Image 1 (spheres, rainbow, N blue to C red):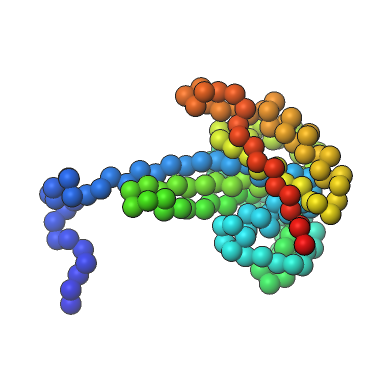
Image 2 (image 1 turned 30 degrees about the horizontal axis):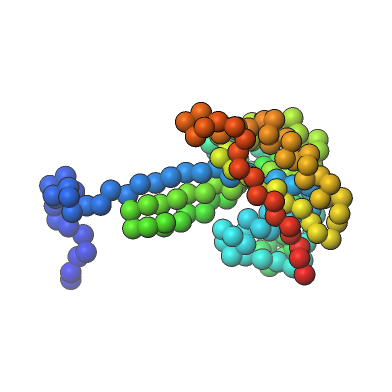
Length: 179
């Protein structure tokens, strides 16, 4: 049986033959009014999952720390083939991209709930973000009116690190639910 593993430890191999893999982690916020499809966009991009049927099911997400989240789901959450639930609070998904043979990019997509009453927690959720997507629903004009509020909220509560020049984080506007 042939093994693909080397019998020598990596430190015994010539270092010039081992390319150094650089990994980058970017936290991207996904914000917008309730029901604009933020969670669906993330699920489609990260897991290639999409559902045309939606049901507003409440899921509670509790921040356990800056880098990790605990979830206390309701016992009757639907399966993936069922309607996609919305959430209260925050959730995130990780997309790993092999940018090149020596570069890996990890995108943390933070799904920020659209409910107004959670606005006082957004500063904690926004911390260390390097970009944002503001989502609105083209079939509901009032969600486009909320875009300005979300952009102002982002500009007020999060900035690029000084090493990146400071200032506002880059923001992309996404029109969703286009038939």
